[in-house]
Length: 285
Image (cartoon, rainbow, N blue to C red; front, side, top):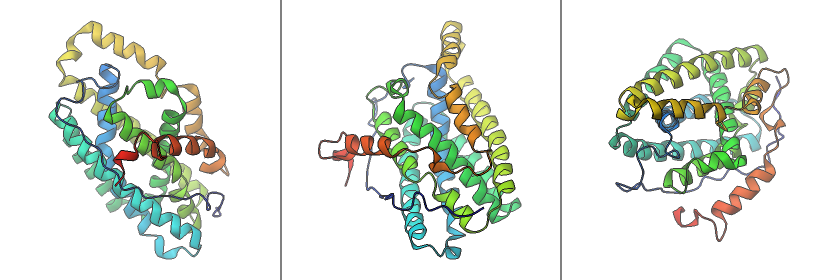
């Protein structure tokens, strides 16, 4: 595989930003009152701090092998953004823990999983797993940014603001880990095998942890609430054929994350969130 510089001129800005979740500011089922989606999003948030740390370590281990100055600059931006994501998700996860979501359990199991990966797999394979997971997060991020139904699920809460910011930055740096993997000689076979591995464990993790989280919620035992929520999953903007089609693109020979052009999407949301009148301008420090 060869390194592609197609994304080299796109700036990766490390934004100094803070979010706040005052007690009582979130309804219990904060994703549009939906039981299952609230627990699923809480679990996904719980994996980010340890996940982002793993991504940073995986990319940093190969940084001294990079010779392309633009890629080196993008790596520094990637690391800065990921460190900030981990910090902000830790704060959200603590608030969700106070609300009864088992985010600390998700954090511990994620830490254990990535520790095992680093102990049993080579650094290059860990980098391939990072590139695969970055594709997952980019697809979900760009779905959130492009689908009004996805945005509507989060209402006008601080969680919505944080996830929109996170989605923008995931979209900005979506090809960095992939390009580092290519630049250090990562093979296509290993890249695709890492995605199969990632799909299996990611799917198991989401289902198992969401189930454990639901069992702890008294609302789960209301059959009307549970059936309504499970039925709504069929229409989730994050579980459409187009979303799964984008996941499947990763298995194609010659795939690159920038084959899906997100330039217009990023321009729109960067201005809407961080412009002079941006909704998150007051969050920036």
